[in-house]
Image 1 (cartoon, rainbow, N blue to C red):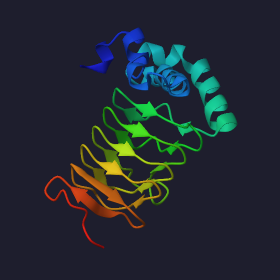
Image 2: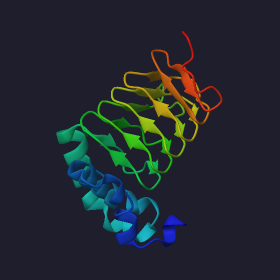
Image 3: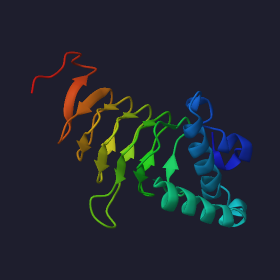
Image 4: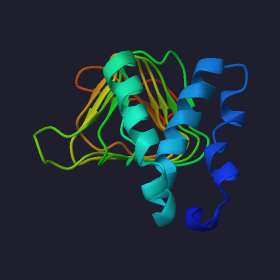
Amino acid sequence: MNKSNMSFRKFVLQDWAANKHNTKGRIVTLCFRIANYGRCNKTARYLLLPYRVFYTLLFEWLLGIEIKYQTVIGAGLRIFHIQAIVINQGAVIGENCTLRQSITIGNKVDGGQCPVIGNNVNIGAQVCILGDITIGDNVNIGAGSIVVKSVQPNCTVAGNPSRIIKSADNLEIIKQ
């Protein structure tokens, strides 16, 4: 659905069901979507300016959650354990993705390109995803992984540097 035609209520609640039984996740995604609404609606961009200042002060400065309101994130975002999440505004995240604590998604150098993350990606705790890379659909990224190379769809990666440990083609864990 074209997000510019989506009602405000539907837009800001697009992650609500994905965070069922997760009050913190619901609050963070709701606040993000309210600030993010101006990206799709020119009138709201101006009306929400005071709210975006509040969002930046509260989330980035006080709570340490840096999900820039300009970031493109698909519906169904799930956030567990909201501490220390940093997402560069240039990153693109697909639908039905899960984020956990202490993750960084961004560029390798100032002004560099950011990752594009597909749909149904599950990102573990303390993961760094950096640079001009693509993470395919249906990928699991293990806790503590450092991902600096593109990842094919339908696989599991882990480690530092990350490597494929399971894929749809080979259901066995790949020996190291």
